[in-house]
Each structure stands twice: as C-alpha cells, then as structure tokens.
Amino acid sequence: MAIPRTVFGEEHEMFRATVKDFIEREIAPHHDKWEKDGIVPRELWRKAGEAGLLLTGIPEEYGGAGANFLMSAILIEEMSKGLYSGPGFRLHSDIVAPYILHYGSEEQKRSLLPRMARGEIVTAIAMTEPGTGSDLQGIRTTAVRQGNELIVNGQKTYITNGQLADVIIVAAKTDPGEGAKGISLVIVEADRPGFARGRNLEKIGNKAQDTSELFFDNVRVPPSNVLGAEGKGFSHLMQELPQERLIVGLAAVAIMEAALEWTLAYTRDRKAFGRPIADFQNSRFKLAEVATEVQVARVFVDKCLELHIAGQLDVPTAAMQKWWLTEVEGRVLDICLQLHGGAGFMWEYPIARAFADARVHRIFAGTTEIMKEIVARSLMVGR
Image (cartoon, rainbow, N blue to C red; front, side, top):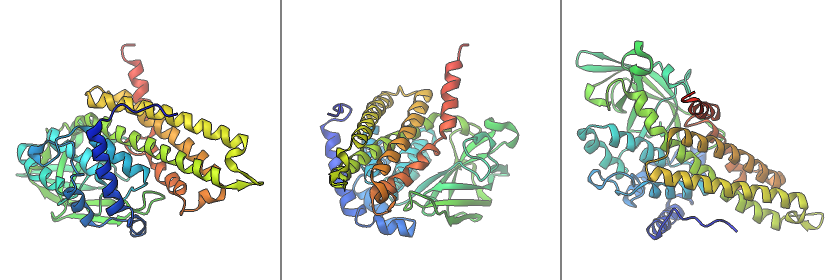
C-alpha cells in the first residue's frame, strides 16, 4: 500500500482535475501527430493561457495565478505521467518566468509576464553552447557594449522552445575577460535583425518538443534588455537552478509511477508457458523492487517539494534529489521495459516512449556527474 501524500490540499486536487481535463481535451488526441511534426502548434499555448495553466506561480498583478509552486508541480506530474513532453510549459512558466519576476525591472515584468501568462508569447532560455554544456563559465556568446547598445554574438544549442520562442533569455559575457563575473542575462526578442534559428533538432525522445540551435550575428539590443544586474548572470542562474532541478525530479517520479502501473497491467495479462508473467517469482521480485524504489523516490521528492515551498531547498539537496531520482528512474524504466519483453521495444507501448524520453533527465539541468560534484563540495565545507 502506498504511503499517503500530504503535500497537496483540496484546492490542489481541484486544479489537478482541471489539468487532466485540459490534457484529455487539448493534448492527448494530438500528441502522436506532434511527435511526428517535432513541434506543437502555437494555438495550444493560447488555449493553455485561457485555461489558467501558465505562470501559476507568478503574482496576479503580473497576470499570473498568484499560487505557489504546488500548482506547477501538479501540471508537471500530470504532463509527465502521460508522456506529453511536447508543450514546453514548465520551462516557460517555471524557469523563464521566475527569472523575469526575480531579476527583471518593473518595465520588463509588466511588458513580458502578462503576455506569457496569456500564451501570447512563448519564451526560452539559452545557456548551452556547442562546446559548453554544464560548464557555464566557459560560454563564448558575448554581449559587448557599443555606444548605447549591446551587440550579441554567438551560438546556442539544445534550446527548448527554440523554434517557437518570441523572447529568449541569453546567457552571454558582457565582460569576456572576467570569467563567471562577466556573465549577464540578456533578453533578446526573436524579431531583431541578426537573430536566426537553426534546424529543429531530432532527438531520441521528447520528440514533440521543439529543440533548436540559435544564432546571434551582431544582434543589437538596448542595455535595458539586461535582466538583473550586469555581470551577475552566473549568480542569478545558480539561485534559480534548484527549482529547475526539482522540476526534473518531479517528472522522473511521475514517469516511474506510471511505468509501474503499465507494467503491473501488462504482466498480469500477458502469459508465458501458460501462466501470467506476474506469476513467475523473478517477475514478482522485480516488481517488488520497482515498487519499493518508486515509493522511496516519491517520499523523497515530496519532502523536497515541501522544503521548496518553505524556501528551504538548498543547492546540495536539490542536486541530491536530481541525480538520485533520475538514476533510479533509469533503473526502474529498464526493468519495466524488460518485463514487457519484445513489446517494450515497440513505440506503440508507452514504456518504450518513457524509456526514450527519460534518458535526458540525467543530462539537462546539470548532469549526474555535476550534481555529485556539487554534493561533494558541500561535504567539504569547513574542512
């Protein structure tokens, strides 16, 4: 029997019902097509805005719902368990929007956040470069001041929402000689001359999610497009990453729980040698292992969620949950796929899509290896 969850209240479950209804009506019937297309239609964003699903954690004065992160967690869980990876809502609402809320000027907040909440504009954040992944200090994109403008030059890759984004927060060096202290966050509107999108990248999973290369060739923006303090971009990124890593953990656990349900149903119905697969001792033991790991993972991520709501989720703990939960997710999905036999290798079965979609969880928002380094460094403090 599963340990009851205590983190959500009645109002949250009402919102969960709204999310499920939206998914059933607007996403589920079309997601297979979007996977073939490699992108979702822009109209979906407007519908999500009308349904109140975007920017739930942003204050009402800026067009959001004024709720805490629990509403975001519900959307993350419901989208993840259904493997609806196409709509990049969580990046838009729970990664980009907080950067603007926490570091933006009043003008930036009033200009961007209400339109984001309505789904009128789509946003992205561009950190990763072809030669620079987790090492953000090594980025080469620059935003050098020239007169009363910043000139942005460089290239970004693996950018979620890259094909649809109207506004991109770009991590760039405003002082190339200062290392991490020279990094700033710069808002670049997609209609500025010199900005170009590359191809929509083909991935092994998350196939409906547009992921792109972005190019900046002497893109001119005013200094007022700097988000937060100039030269403080690296610090701003570090302060926001715990929530991004929690988002990955929440998605990982939701997918694991769904995979366990699919596998229990399959092994009860599928027969081998005249008996259900679930009747074999090895199958039962494997299912027991998976159920236990999923339950432990659920308790851990819910505790981290509680800490985050209370403003107490620190960087090392966020790193711990991110690497551990995604590594467990990999083991769980591998076992579940194995228990499906040949069917597990077929794209029509959700376990195959989950196996492919989940692999990136151990990479983005910081690789497992970087997460372990963060935890290790925290253990050395004071020695």
